[in-house]
Image (tube, rainbow, N blue to C red; front, side):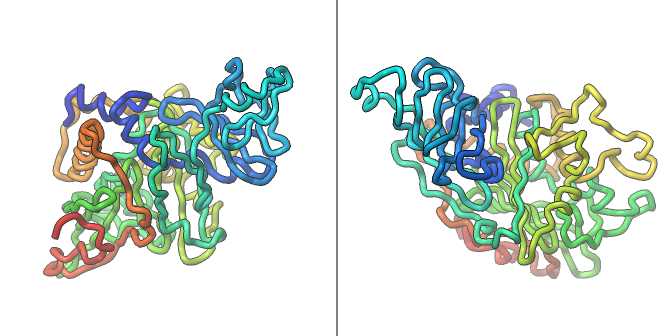
Amino acid sequence: MLNHQQNERLCRVGRGTPMGQVFRQFWLPVCTSAQLPGPDSPPLRLRLVGQNFVAFRDSSGVVGLLDEQCPHRGASLALGRVEENGLRCLYHGWKFSTTGAIQDMPNCASKAIRANVRAPAYPVREEGGLIWAYVGSASEPPPFTRYAFMNAAPENRTVLRINVSCNYLQLTEGGFDSSHVGILHSDVARPGWMNAAGTTSHDLEHPGALAVVDNDPELELTETDFGFYYAAFREGGQERLNVRIVPFMMPSTRIIPAPTLLFTVFETPADDTHTSTYIVVHGAKPVDRARIIGILGLNDPRFWSERDCEFRASWAEGFWQDRENMKTAWTGFTGLEQEDAVISLSMGPIFDRSIEHLVPADRAVSSLRKMLLQATDRLEAGTPLTLPADLTDVGAPDVFIRKDERSKWRDLTPHHWIGP
């Protein structure tokens, strides 16, 4: 349980807030590559850690990220024209490059103004089907971190963005709550749950397909140079244990295993009460995008659309929960993201953690909060926050081990551990 002051410290992400400063230390995904589909495509208005930006792809295919307001008179550049390798403001025609340099000023001939005024611009990278940006204050951005999905062939990877109207921490914590998988996602995690113990699923592409039925896993954690690994141990019968290992990468990233795929998930705060969830799915073979959208329950247009990536379910329509269907299905929802997003939204825009009661199965959630609070303290003390430049070796094993080999679970992971 957190007190009110700690909860505020973790949840507020605007300029000058402790967690806002933490997020600004890292490269963050800000949109998908598909949202800027080609040279001179329409600009994209973005909100990130409480600040408004505009992203655009110029005539050469280079992506830029600028403050939304034109430095002349403050009009939104998201309404502008993308042409001739620049972004032109509609109000007075000022045109800016991806670096923020003024290329044209139709209403001013002053060379001095052109040389001295710039649109604030931010370092940008395009990797793995995502556009990344560094919006911190350091003159040099930190090293860019590479993840395993960035090495996958484009056909072996698919990228989704889901905008959810709640605080980033509610969504992030769900990814480190192993016990909820076999309960909230009962229909796939333990099909036949209505019959006593239920059965296990054999869906090789589904991250909710637990290998065994055990809703009270024992957890162990080890700190790493990127955050931590947590291992959830479930009884596998006789002398076996199932161990499902999930890594947490600062400040809000996780990798969730499916039998043949990995789901890398980033929670990027737009502001205190809005979050963009980026899900990157990759494997050794081509990924069926329509199948993944179906697994997540995003194939229902009431809930989500590729057009704007907004998750639309709300209390106004009861989240479109199908109460009649609950006679045979657990939640009345369909798909992992439907269930996860709705549960997070049901907590309200920012959940008051001072009223909760944690149990041993919440150990990874507690560790996540502790690590984030420690990060705010370190940053305020002047200690920089960084990630390794190469995390391509980090995955999420989900395997069976002998019970007498439980203490060796760390050997299933790359050696990013801190300490022996």
